[in-house]
Length: 122
Image (cartoon, rainbow, N blue to C red; front, side):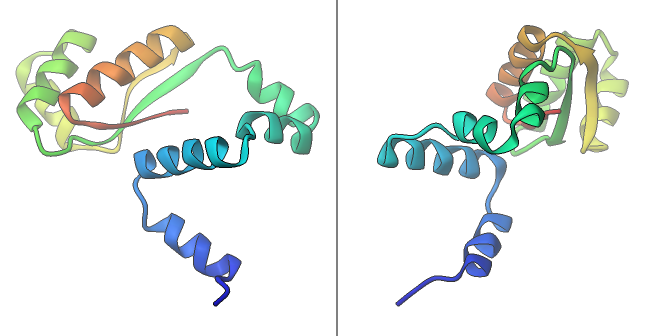
């Protein structure tokens, strides 16, 4: 039985971001390739431009199952009051911080994910 490309894309559409990341890592390991290297090879200059991104936006897509912990993490990261942080959590998807360094963005993403939120870097 053969699976079509459309069936695979539909399966991807139903996955969470973390599930897609885990799948990509498993494919890289199984086939001994790197998706980043393939993107540069296919994208040429576009891949190089993406690799040079210096500012990132941290976007919380969902507060997950532990809203209270996420609100605490938002307060710590943004300095917002309780009401404002709660409002931010409840308005997901929402940009938590914009135009920040890669290191700061990754640290904030890790903190929010540890609290239970789903987060993307853009």
